[in-house]
Amino acid sequence: MADGQLIEFDHATKRFGAVAAVSDFSARVNPGVVTGFLGPNGAGKTTTLRMLLGLERPTSGTATIGGSRYAELRNPARVIGAMMEDPGFRPRRSVERHLTTAAKAAGIPLSRVGELLSFVGLENDADTRIAALSLGMRQRLSAATALLGDPGVLVLDEPANGLDPEGIRWMRTLIRGLADEGRTVLVSSHVLSEVEQIADEILVIAHGELKFAGTMEDLADPRTGPVVVDAADRSALSVSLKDAGYEFEILRSGLTVRGSDAATIGGITARAGVALTTLQQRGPTLEDVFLDLVHDRYVPPAPVADETALFDLPVASAEPVADPSTGSGSGDSTDDAHTTVAEPVEASEDERPLIDDADITVPEPVEAPASAEAPAEERPLPGISDLAAVASLFANPVTDPNIAAAGIESAEVQDSESEPAESDAEDLDRTRVIDVVPSFDSEPADHAADVAEGSDDEHGDSSDDEQR
Image (tube, rainbow, N blue to C red; front, side, top):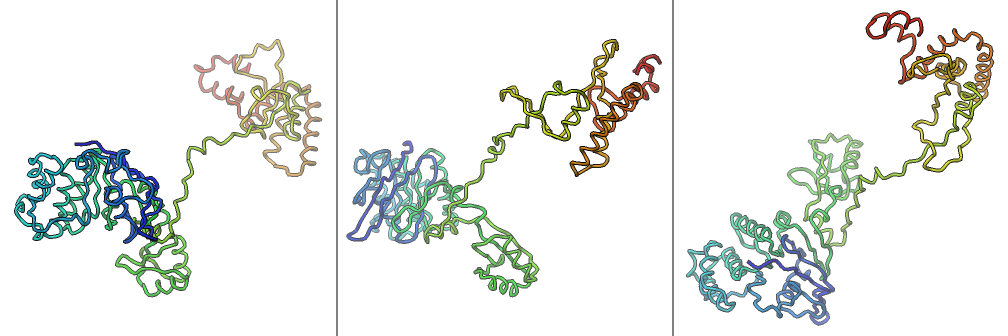
């Protein structure tokens, strides 16, 4: 088996007098895939294939197989095989004689003739004249002729024409198998449903010009398909769609509406009071897209946003917060955190602190006396005035900034008056911390005391409870 070769059309143009059958056609057909070649009657498909097979000389441009024109191939039958719509059979020849003559002309062993007759299912018709063959049997003979030299490139023009359902399935399997072997397969067909089932890539030509080249996935946007809608009262449904200016086809599955979406059609019928039994937006078929391309109504699918780009968004840095150590006391620290924005610290971007929530700032802890040998996990807690002010904000939110400022000044006065009663302040201070700012570093004193009373194994003797 020969390897698949790249087929390339480079600005191929063919004119017949003043008529341009093919105009500036450029495309590539890759090996290892099935490429469908589509176009309406008179679009230039057959002329394009004839230029590739050396049956027509291009007016300008080139059509090459593996970088060489057909006339430059040393043994064309071993490189490319063609199954044309009009193969030019001699009707008085028998099936076997036709293949034998073609094998001798290409220098192919005659044993290949018997193999191919059996492969295409014509072994019982070897002596039958071609004129007596049906259209489907002629198609099988044409396929045998194309495969005679075991080429790496196959050009099939309307291969399913005239075949019965069993023959169509056989041809579909043959085409798919040839591509899976790494051969280059170019299929021209009017049976769009067959092309849709077997083709990996599509070329669409209309008015002698290339309209589309790409994969089946690139061809159609599933959001632009027709809407199938149906109701028990089809007459009322039809009237509502006509009043809205929509054209539709009445099929067995329902009414097919094009150029809209399911949400719009559903809204129209709801306002008309029509109860629907079916409302579905289907993906566009190859037939729908083909007709849009031929009549210049095709709109390329909108590009899909890359979901990974959502994770590449720049993260806004938090506002710099002043160093708590520069404050004059716990009361001043609380006042700054809740009334004004702290002045930014002059630091580089790498050294600038980032916080998760700039609106909540934990007040600066009051330093414990040096004589108190407190464990490392029992940090000194904030002053009573600070936490009382914060608690009052959570309990009774204040929206007026003047009232909020007055409440904080009052808390500062109470703080200065309550400094002598240090032991009472500490008890109330701890209670406020439990209600307002839960600490994950140490347990609240009251809770620790309750746990200590219930379990001596966890917290030791009563002297530890008195110390807490």
